[in-house]
Amino acid sequence: MGPAKFRITETLCAFEKPRLIAWEKKFGARWLLFAKREQHIEPISDSTCRYYNVDILNGLLAPVVYLCFGNYMRRGFRDVATGLKAFMESQAGK
Image (tube, rainbow, N blue to C red; front, side):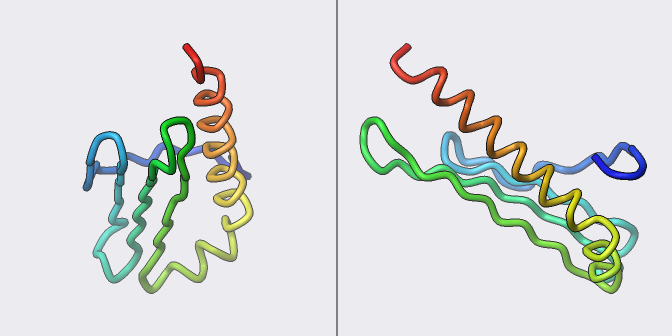
């Protein structure tokens, strides 16, 4: 992940199977640091779909977190999307 490993427990805040899953985390008070991630899947046709995610990081400490961990966060989010794509492509036609 980054220079240090630590565990963060997030809370599921939205689930609309099979199109949306979202979770969030407050770090202290919401005004201090709040993170939310939504993952969306939209059908395009019977055999294709569109995947995108929305990442929200707000609060007084958000600029510091972006500065210190932004590259690690982007890499982690990209790795999740790449893994999901590979898994779904491996399931196609099964």
